[in-house]
Amino acid sequence: MGMESTHKLGKIMVAFDGSSDSEKAVRMAAMLAGGFRSELVVVHIYSSPVLAYSGAGAMPVPNYAELEDAAKDGGQKVLAKGVQLAKDSGVAARGELLEGSSTVQALVEYSAAEKVDLLVLGTRGNTGFKKLVLGSVSSGVVNHSSCPVLVVR
Image 1 (cartoon, helix red, strand yellow):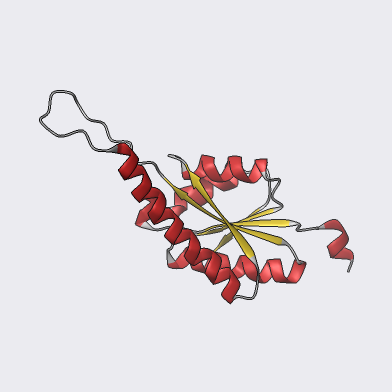
Image 2 (spheres, rainbow, N blue to C red):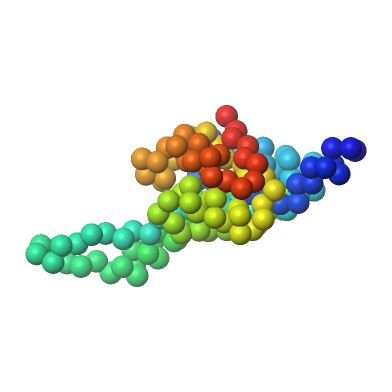
């Protein structure tokens, strides 16, 4: 019991991008949340499809709102999977969809704002994080996070 008094995990946040590594992270986070009776927040970051169009080309200017909605919609679907995965592990979790061009920055800022006690990540991410493999995300988060980070292999 001594550990519980010093290490209170009131809120655990887990990053989910649909990859198998992030599924492992959600399962681990759910196990910890169950054990510590913590609040669990599953977070998915999507990047807004802002495209650079030069005025010179004959390309039609896309409907940004439509592209934005599609990106958000895709993000919601991925997030829903992560939340369901936590529920399947026996833990109630809430999902949070964040928009950000930098996954690291979005995770670090959100976890600080939410006063998260533990941030859980997978090792490598999906192509959904573009070429930003979670190796660089996890090391970036570890370097900048204000709370403890657990990287699940």
